[in-house]
Amino acid sequence: MFRNIQLNGNIANAVKGCTEVVATTSTKAPFAGKSPKQVLPTKPIFLTNYNLQSTLLSKKALTPVTTTQVRLVHTDFKVPDYTAYRRDSVKNPSASNRDTFEKRNAFTYMVLGTAVTGTMFCAKAVVHKFVLSMAPAADVLALASIEVNLNEIPEGKNATIKWRGKPLFVRHRTSAEIQIEQNTSLSELRDPEDDSVRVQKPEWLVIIGVCTHLGCVPIANAGEWGGYYCPCHGSHYDAAGRIRKGPAPSNMEVPPYKFIDDNTLLVG
Image 1 (cartoon, rainbow, N blue to C red):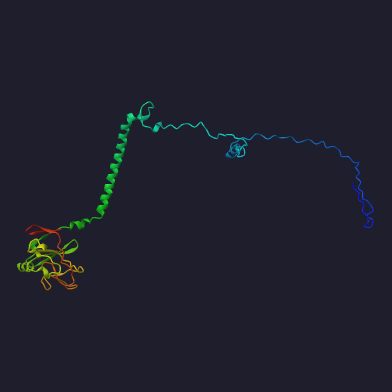
Image 2 (image 1 turned 30 degrees about the horizontal axis):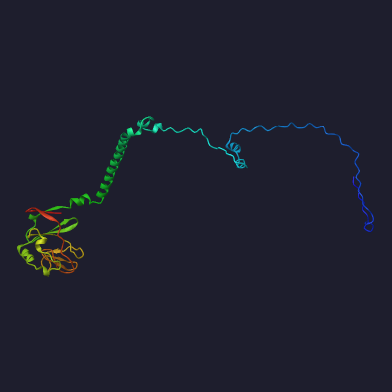
């Protein structure tokens, strides 16, 4: 028990305060309760990955004060066996591989040669197909060469035949036309070319009937020189297909042709 004495302010300096401690006379009865049974922890069973990680050494344990060595490597690995993948000729450990070197290389070369040959045949087929795709169609090839019956073209007339999508002029010239064209001076021509160069036989003129100016089809037996006349821009050609007047820059083209016999002409 504590007891405090409080005095007025005017005599507080003259009086001493004191504190008395008095022990209590009451006593407490002793407690006689039963203590609980102490349970000891059991050792855990490590079955999961998380529990197994807790059994590993920590970084602190692996960093001792003194130099130590901790081996974390297994030495019980089984050496792989590649016997099933090896050739029978090299399975014998007591035999030298040089004895079967040529035989093994022969098999390798045979397999490699077969693969290369097959690849070359496939590449050839692909290239051949690609080249044929750029070739003219079958209907165009069928009209690439035509035969002309010369008996159907009278003297002094001009026949027009379709060849490779273009008009083909076959002219049966008279003796007077032949003489005029052969006697023409090359100095008079814009595109100098002798008559004997443009014809294989003097009486037959074979040319492509397309004006060399802008591609129009000239009219036969017309114009100032009696050969061909282009109505588009007024180009005049003679009986040999040579330009004589007008805007055309050159003579009409002569296609490849030959005479199979006296009465048959093959063009192309």
